[in-house]
Image 1 (cartoon, rainbow, N blue to C red):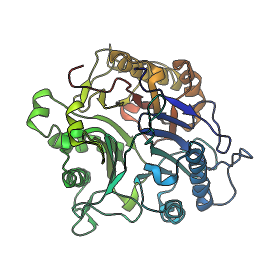
Image 2 (cartoon, rainbow, N blue to C red; image 1 turned 90 degrees about the vertical axis):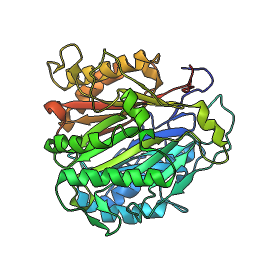
Image 3 (cartoon, rainbow, N blue to C red; image 1 turned 30 degrees about the horizontal axis):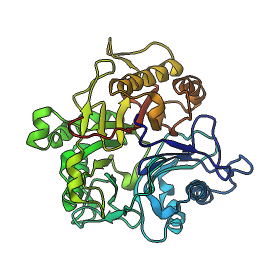
Length: 421
């Protein structure tokens, strides 16, 4: 990693401190905030009350972290809300709306099979805009640009797209026809198509091509529907002649949920490269940065995603299953061995592009059985020598190949991605 920008990992005593993650990890123009559980940092216990009180505590913890690094909640560009019961979303929204004064970030909401603390009903993580850069960068004069288009569903609690510096985060799109405000007719195939059309319409509204997507997250009600989703997905990627020539597809993660808003079967969000930055950067800046996609034989390959997609100062790593790339089969053993293989695959990808595991800024861990978290943690910490990344852990109803663990990551990319490097 280049010495021009330094990753900054920080904790505050005003929010719960974890032995397996750092509360906030800043690099370049973004901060990644670890998932916050409804824990009172003074007592270490889950707060009393129901989901309303718990959601408030999660957001208070995020606010405390944000303010500890001299930011405000309106610097948040993306929020992920993980609920034990999807029916609780309206109650969460009531609290959520009180934490933002001027606008709502992009957002993804889903129900999960389990959360990593008994009694927790909700967990929330965040991405923060970081205009001052991180040491040794000088402060940067950037502005956040939030936009909606009538050609995609408009939400009362999120903005469709929020751009900052060289990235756009796109809110999770449900299979809703923006003309009617209702779910499209048909099954998961039709729903997936509508989700992707909504994303495409959002991108077209800000003059960004579909192939500028660097990471896609697919959230499924039924894991068995993935083949039907993939059938539609491959009609959207690659989208342009250039992308087809090189076979470019984004990095990707697929998550089996226990429930989605509106009882949908599928929901999709995206991270988009944004070469022109956001005002007041010069448009010409886009010519100095290109998407760089890479695969290595030392980790499992897929025709549906690229292992790592770099743009500007970040790399997005596709979700890794506990598959031995030599055999293409799941490794033997339990959750500990499987987590080790997932992380070994990530390490192989990271090293194939000249990075090290300590360049990771955010890790997302999915486990089939939430009781396996301790076993995962035992192996997890051995992969990092310095400050641990920010992290989100959820229990899911299923993982591809009937695996016990799946892990994806975001990597700091200090050298940037100049077109001729």
